[in-house]
Amino acid sequence: MSCLEVVGGNSLYGEGTIQGSKNAILPMMAAALLTKEEVLLSNCPNISDVICMIDIMKDIGVQVVKQEHNLLIHAKDILNVTIKEEYGKRMRASVILASILLAREHKVKFPYPGGCTIGARPIDLHIQALEKMNVQFQEEEKFIVGNTLGFCGADIYFSFPSVGATQQAILAGVLAKGTTRIYNAAREPEVWTLCDMLNKMGARILGAGTKCLCIEGVECLHGIEYQVPCDRIVAQTYLCAAAGCGGEITLHTDCVMQMKMVMNMLQEMGVEIKSNPNMVCCKRKGQLKNIPKVKTAVYPGFPTDMQSIFLALLSIGEGTGVVEEEIFESRYACVPELKKMGADIRIVEQCAIVKGKRKLCGADVEAKDLRGGAALILAGLEAEGITRIKGGEYILRGYESLESELGQFGAKIRWM
Picture 1: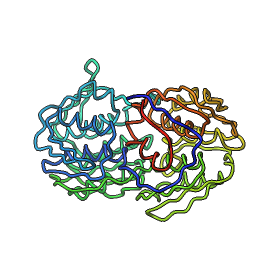
Picture 2 (picture 1 turned 180 degrees about the vertical axis):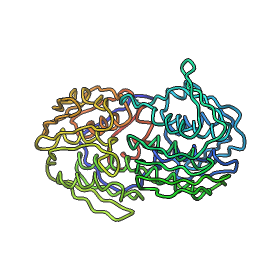
Picture 3 (picture 1 turned 90 degrees about the vertical axis):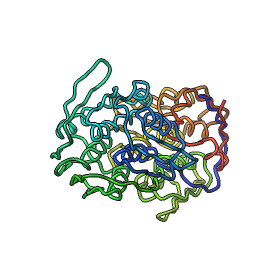
Picture 4 (picture 1 turned 45 degrees about the horizontal axis):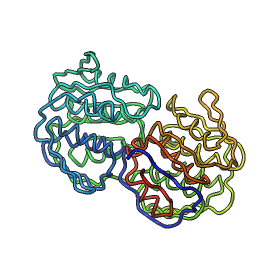
């Protein structure tokens, strides 16, 4: 079940809710291992990355029970400090467990993480932060081995506001001796959510949502019941699908305020957007008008996760648009596939120049990463005819039952 068939040419209508956040749930699952008490996470998305994280947790001795969208985690004991290579290859976020195992067992062995092929995505910032906090690392064949006598608070300065490295340092700091200050911290909502959850577990974190975090280490954390927020990237994907296909959809979600940048750009393209804190309505009747330039940036800027999806949208808009990728150096893997469908896209260094008002046609294409796969689905919905997308397993990493979720609005998508 790794190939998707998309029938294009249908406008989208209706309303629906949005799944739990992929980028929030994974570090929250890791945080649940910092206490020996039970943690219940609700609104957990049914995606393959969550399944992979569950597999890792069970492999290291953690009790995990998943029922529909509820996830019960009980890390009473940690029996194994090694994350297998197969898990590291499947999911980059496996590296977030390094600080957890070091905090609990003072040792960790993990492979270089994988996931999507969207650039080097080095983990040097993770390593540097943990070294500052009294961890010694060494390479052992295909693994990295870390040892510590216990985390110590430190001042950490990030050269780049990495979301993953910020979350890693937060997880290390909450049980460390002393105070940890993180400068140039990531400000993404998924960082704030992690801090909120940890604080409700008994941590002492100040400055969530700002560039400077202050963490006063505590002796222990307690269990909690916590609801995973909605996935802002999934919500924005659906808004772009409605903008590209025409029609009118309404999304009920708690992440509306986090989508202002994308919603503003859609309005500039001629899409009617109405919203309140818990709902957003997207309506398009006329021709899309391309905006001159889209430049990815860290939050609250334009999200890199939406870059590929906007390439598909700009391909059918009126005029020329330029997309500049500032975060990852290899996030244009979907461009050759979009060109097979008739898109006019030229890559110049880190920019994609898109000549719009093209007539897209269905074709056989292949997804190379998660968001590129979503872009191909969007292009398939916009196109005339049938599009078949290989590599559908990438899409399963972040989108839950996308064929039925978009299907409720009238999209025709099925697994082959």
